Length: 301
Length: 316
Ligand SMILES: C[S@@+](CC[C@H](N)C(=O)[O-])C[C@H]1O[C@@H](n2cnc3c(N)ncnc32)[C@H](O)[C@@H]1O
Ligand SMILES: [Fe+2]
Ligand SMILES: [Fe+2]
Image 1 (cartoon, protein in one colour):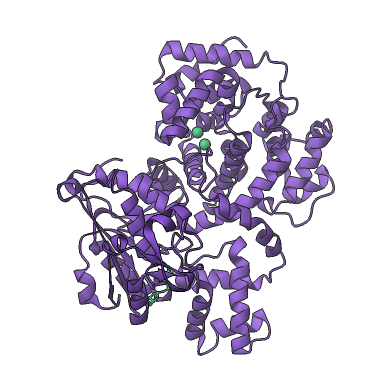
Image 2 (image 1 turned 30 degrees about the horizontal axis):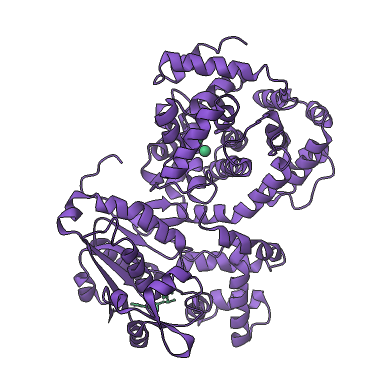
């Protein structure tokens, strides 16, 4: 199965989980309640590490003191944001979630390719929302190119990447990545879709870049959000975690409107919508969770 | 036993009479195999009795026939999944801290592997037991979440739901191997592949076997209808609970060892409605978090399968 690699690395961390201060589980629950990010027992050490770095910065001597800082201190909201930064930083890379890509290619694409209304236009629009430096957008484009001779033969694919941060958009446009960003990319993809660049880095080939366009967009900008129409797939990973319930709910409503009927909305692999929207159907694929906008006529599956 | 009870015909209305006769005939041969489970069936029957009629000493005595099972039971009782921080020193001590019902289900778990003399596994045994134990754990957690009284029964139903797969390995090895191969090649569900190529599935053979055990009827319904709880003539909430737990396991790396191309919409599955009508608490459940919590249990489930079914998995 696809998650074999994860299973292999989980064991030593699981052992250390017992030695972790129980207060970190309390912090884990708080982080989940506020952001929707769930750090499983095996990833708890990552959360603990993030907390410890923040404890140094804030001068908290014990997890208990830091807990008080997160819950009672006047700057608790800001501190929680800092902690979220700490635990999501450097996570991004190309091909980060293979189960999501499998769901896309093995289940969703065959379903969309067979869909009568989509067959008229033969067009697929994918949005990497909060794309940061572009890794996810390019990953999606490459996976679509892999299907261009098969199930997507004759289809047009468009990938849009948007982010609030101008500098990230610049980096995304350049499409040059080093070892760390490419740590999950197989040789097959490296050879087929990249060219050598300076300092041992690799640059995404023009035929991939051709499918992708990046622009700056703030999710809080309602009028511009309305323009993001007719999406088939939206990926929004580790972005909504910073939003409070009300603004998160508003952004998710936008996403629902932005999607075509039968389209899918993906969050990060350890992220939850916290039951914020009941128009979406929560659906499971092997190893991946997504939110589905059901077709207008609700038929039996 | 020559014939299965009448009611089995009624339980599987979709099967042609010739097929169900064939299943019954083959399943009846299982009993004539020399490896009848020694403590499995007596234990299973004890589980049927009301608690006040079960004596701790009866259970302890049953277990004392088999040192390995006793040791495995203690190991399991000390797993975080069963709620004891420290390993109990004896079966009796385990009963005191975990309760008789819980210890009974632990014992059943430890003996079920030995109860089946599968000579030719047509599915990876570790994969099979991880799925079964995983499903059992999810069933119990889910019934805890729903504040249902009978978590242990749910656990047993989850553990045994796919027992028909073992029956298939034992009495239809060729046909089942082909179905399994077909399923993993086409990445379709196992029951679909079985129905396509054999005309019946593990639900039918599992139910036929369970009928001969004289266990509680709701357990038999769970085995017979776990893929279509809405077709179950009785005990629909339990069957629905097993159905959803099975689905959840299959999408969280505790399936049958191959990629099933499927989109699972649990909340809009008929089983969800059945369960929600019985337990209001389901409306407030955070299914995503429940999913993540299952991920956390996978390592422990694998470890338990290693200890408990490690020996039993090797074909003799
Ligand atoms: C933790 S990063 C995640 C980036 C990437 N999706 C990933 O999974 O690695 C969060 C990103 O969200 C972007 N972001 C934060 N607030 C935003 C907003 N209001 N509108 C659009 N993007 C925003 C940030 O610029 C940053 O690139
Ligand atoms: Fe099954
Ligand atoms: Fe199953």
